[in-house]
Amino acid sequence: MPGTFRAHPVTIRAMRADIFAGANNELFVDLEYNISCEGCKRVIDIQFWKFCPYCEKSFPKELPKPLKPSEV
Image (cartoon, rainbow, N blue to C red):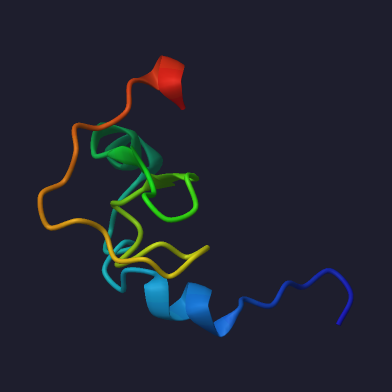
């Protein structure tokens, strides 16, 4: 269908189910927690994902410090 997008099944499984629970954009910025994925080296905001949506690697149990805005 023109003008629509389809999500890959991995993306759907990786997405957190509770991210749209009454939140606004300002809340997303406040909770931002960007890390570099150990598998694919992409920058991932882990507030939205259960695991990396690109390479399917699990996030480490001991999370690294979030990346600074200049590192993103």
